[in-house]
Image 1 (spheres, rainbow, N blue to C red):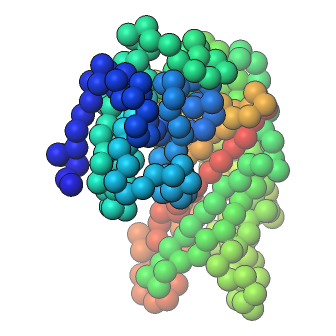
Image 2: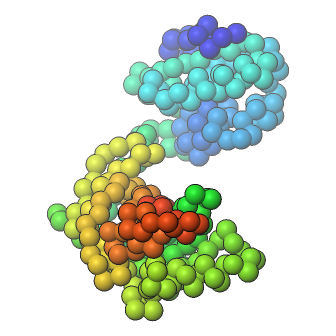
Image 3: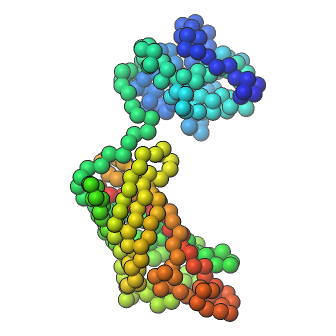
Length: 305
């Protein structure tokens, strides 16, 4: 069976299938959503879980059992993805209900569950309060990667403190502890302390003289978007080694548990704009193995409460 040949059922056909009870009507959404509301008689096998096929087997599904799969609705590929997985596993009697829960609810048909009349947005919108959100240092970190011809090095950098305030004109600042620079790829190697001393020296971040770096937010533009794409553009001034330059990058600003906010993102920045010129071919010649690429990659997560 090819996915293009898969039978697509109408609302009325699904109602008839559910009434006959001669096969499995499968809700492919997450268990907590199924528990809240589902088509009467539907069982649950979440297509997003690694154990999806095991769950189907646990439901007593034989390879020739009549199975109808449904998910959120026309704009979601959940039931089709489930069908593809089942076809590859040898299931032969499959159909999908593309309209899913959305079509069922719009038709005014009853649902079962703990909250059958509830309506949830497919992707919960960002909700913020007009107050300062303060950084949780122990849960916030920057992961850095520096590169050269032979590969490079990676490690972490910790935040000292930070605050972000939402309002008509969002503002905030984040302070990084430059003395906290750590390396991961040379763990256990005698060269690791040599590298760390090098990074702390005047060749790189001169952390004895400049123990902190500060990013001051000058603009935060939020936009509605899918939850897996950046929903914000952050702009501000990064002060590093006593030099301040403007920098901008996309980011995710998301609600997390207990009323907290997470800000996540990644960017490449040109270290030489902040006076970190060691190993740069733009400033030195005949570098040999001392070549270091100008751009440093940062991958950060900030948790605020």
